[in-house]
Image 1 (cartoon, helix red, strand yellow):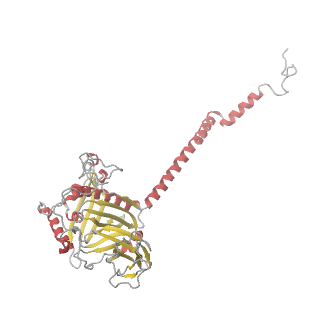
Image 2 (cartoon, rainbow, N blue to C red):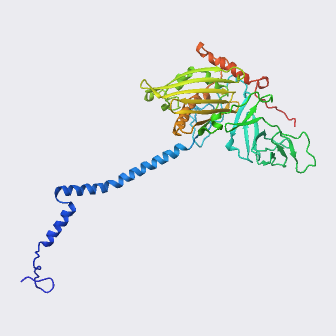
Image 3 (tube, helix red, strand yellow):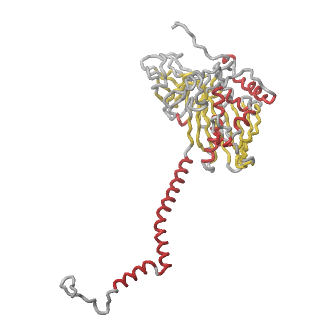
Length: 466
């Protein structure tokens, strides 16, 4: 007789309930879960799949949103690109002044100065206005020391907000006013003995330990101005006063156009070679015709990989008449073709106005991408070393990515020129053809920035006459 689990007796199910009851109950549960039949099973699988797919889709959209936010933040910030000396413009294995095969690395200085044949160079520093620094780099009470144009300068902003440029060395015992000097009202104080020099006229106004200040105690003051967010200095080899003013760009002053970025390059070349490019219209098709996708390394710019795209240029250079004879203008029409078909989106009109030897105003106009300007400044640090800065300002209502792309494209094209400049020799009597007549016209125009006193670079006097 079968035995139960405890008492040894077999237990019968309650009346009205069979042994299969629990089985039937479990069956109903599974049917309900499945929604009934094959259709229910499909619905069950579909619901489970959605639950499995929803987190990956949500994660994807969150990542996409994050990328868009980062892209917008990156585009809203001004572009800042700075190329050090030797970082661009020299081909690997061919750096003048070094052994063949020398490779520049971050830990090795790639270039100590131009040692190629310089040719019969023009005077080193033409007369004109040159950029010193940005206005934002000189807050009230700040002092900056600069070495350029064969001079050492001290630039400071007095407490009333006026910027002043003086010779850097104190006439007392030669201390550098910018190396520890402090602003005292409208004066700069020498860090050595506390002599104070007025920014307006350079006159010494105070000697802490002297009963009287000599009338002749003063330091040289350089003519300066502050225009378009920059502090500029006037250089003339004979010390003459400015003969023309730096034009103010109304859209920059009124903040109708906003700053969108800048690039900075150091170029091993005489300053005259850089603006002369404007009159050399023949080089545009050959050097700047290949697509910017090919980069600035001249070994690869004409690669077949990027041959499907071409830049087309129409250019005309002319000097301006009086009273703006110190200016010239380049009118440039740019277009691009892809697989031989013109891309109207890339049509661009550029008016480049050269103002003196060191300033260029490049105004861009596009059919529906608006207007803007690139300010190019060229400042000679040495006879064969130029600091070139491009600053772009553009309409507020245009997305920042547009002017940043324009500046990037201009940077690629400019670095192609740098490779030529860094490795070329200046020829005072070049071999020209009729189509190169603009180069000679430009040289005649540019000669106005030289004078008899700037015929040769300043020579150091040797001797022991102390």
